[in-house]
Length: 177
Image (cartoon, rainbow, N blue to C red; front, side, top):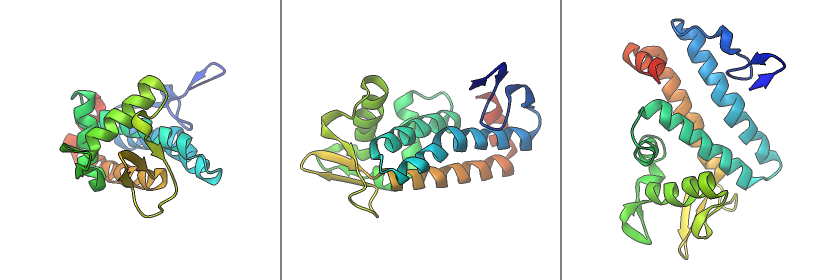
């Protein structure tokens, strides 16, 4: 983000302020980036019932976090690994194609549809209609609750930040991404 002549890494941290050898500084800046660019705006969209826009921010946050956490695996692989670690409801079989997991279907229909075409493929949708369920497949349509998805992302971010603070190897790998 560029404001005037200043290039920001996150809402609070300028690129010039980043110190790759200062764990606390770098982890705080990373957390501020994820919170400030993805999660906070996604939370604000809930107040206005903008399920689609909120879902788009969630998908891009997952894409970003999966890239940081999983390293340089192929996009689909790291996306699916992220779901296996952080959103167990997506690790079940797709009822319309039992040979694939729901995470693969989400990747194809939601992530690829939104990133490459600006739409969700095959009639998929984000909806607040079911409050306590993350994903539903009914009549060949996948529906995802962006509130529940945001909760999964919040939890994943907290766990990853804790890991970076506790495990030196994880922090070293993080610095190299």
